[in-house]
Image (cartoon, rainbow, N blue to C red; front, side, top):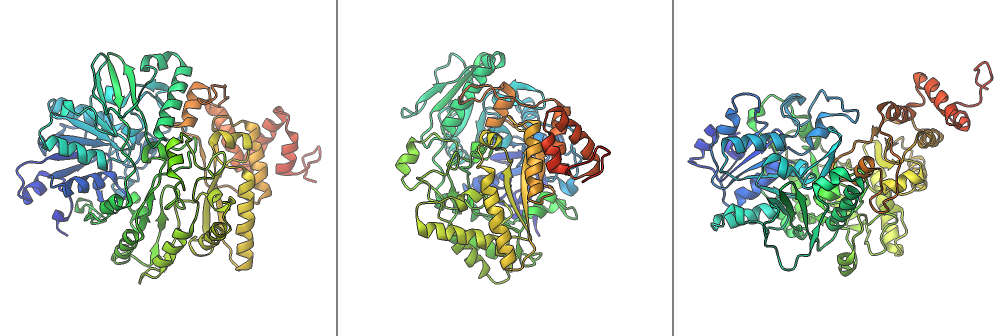
Length: 614
């Protein structure tokens, strides 16, 4: 294929297009894959559709003479910087702060192709080389660090990434609309420094500067960064205000003093319409890695190349998750026509063998779900529409998904459509008050289990302790038991041998060794030997991270005990693997120490004094 089908990545490719200059140059920590699952490709195509000349510099070398940062020169409008699809620190380090040996977003999975915090590193280099050219930062790494945030790897609160990077503007969330408007303003000749009131952007200005804003916006002034450094309760109070505003339809502008300046975070745009989202997916993506990677495999691409995203956003509000903080709480769904068009494109790919690996989204079964009365949604500040119970105003009808799945199977060449994203089973199982909806929701669950599971049905109960689950904003484990019973009944009736694969987390704020022992006993009773488990990793802008750092629940300001010692975290994690011979002795000793010998019996049965099992 000719490289002209992709956005240019080199001076030679720019020249081949006959361009003498560029409008926007995007730097990304990921390899360049021209696919709608990759942010740099989406932003590049959106700006290209505006008639702009756009280039992408993927994974520039920051350790040599910086030629990658110089090779395309100075753009007419601005540089754009993103760390990539994943937060670089989560990408680089385990929960135990050990360096990972691979990177799924790099050719051949090679580690070391990007620095820690590329947003900081790339921006500082660009400001050093081109001090008069604006730099706009975005993507999940910047988005979640737009205000004071706790950094787990440094074990300290850090100021807004605007202050530490020297960037001229931060775009948070999904960036199409603010970037389009930014470019329109700049092309009209408005100076960059005057653009302080664009929705869904953040800027740093002197503390005493008067900054114009939309007259309809309310303004909330947060505790300063310096106060958060010295007072954890202030940090916790800030988080509550930030989260509440992030989950409102009509949010306030947030201002936080930092040093001699102030970070101004303007309210977001309203969620995109279906028509607007469809237009993004209709852009001319090749759906392939750039030819520069010929002969190399990019693991992340292998995982998504035959998948299709149905919607954006998540209203689950899980305490440890960043999706709603970045994509938003309100669901934006594509039209069936847009989705089916992409499925037909996938079915025609040369390497397609009949299996769509994922037909989903952040939570696969939230497609087209919203409040029945949007006026009630406008008054709501809840972080979750599903916790502590499913909102009575939420329309949880899974009928549109059933119709979509059926239409997908009618496309020639498609044999299987699997749901790999995971579903919120509480949305299927809760009584909606409408018998017809409840019947469709039961039919949806059966359909997914029988037709859209590749032998392993993945769900995320996360824990068994109701106390811990309340802190996680997750439903009771009793609901998972109901799900498993239905799953097992379906498998028996249809003579299937599928597995249900539950995900669990250890060392979450509020979780004790005793809770993990209960988890081990409960899952043993259900005949599980757990595989999909993880240790809690604090990431910026989540409720759980705020509790982890401050020791307070930001909504009650009551203390919450959290395990931080690495040895204690390893002890909690060990309970996942109670069935391994090497785990028995340390688990038994720990349970004796905390006075829970009853759980030893549940895990290992009664034993005689000589150690023989009865």
